Image 1 (cartoon, one colour):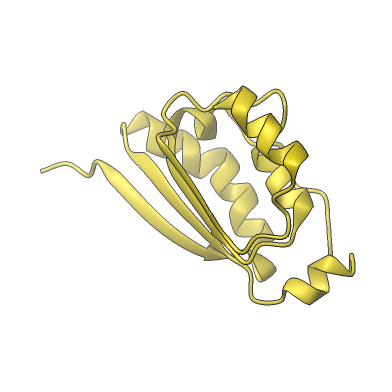
Image 2 (cartoon, rainbow, N blue to C red):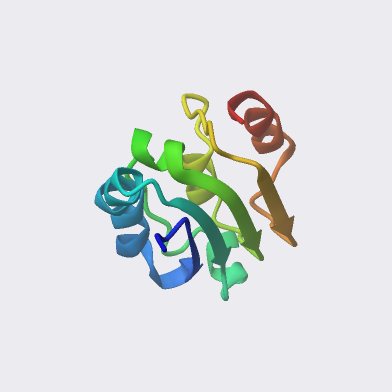
Length: 119
């Protein structure tokens, strides 16, 4: 039986490199194998991100990631740069069926508007 869905939970505080790999070559490999991605992001240190310390620009989400991401859940994410990278105005998530936010200070009205356009 072939793998159909990869469910991945990531602590976004200290996983910038992992996220960049996921946005790039990992997504390419999953797309090649026709595997959908359910991604869960958890941020432990919301205060750090709110103060703007430790924030860095992320590489853009690749087209392969846009084609495999079918479910996104974010909990306590205050890193607005990460959320803005995932939901940039040029994104289009053709497989996305579910988005869930739990206590996410990074989710603003502007971000919700962008999501309504890209999903």
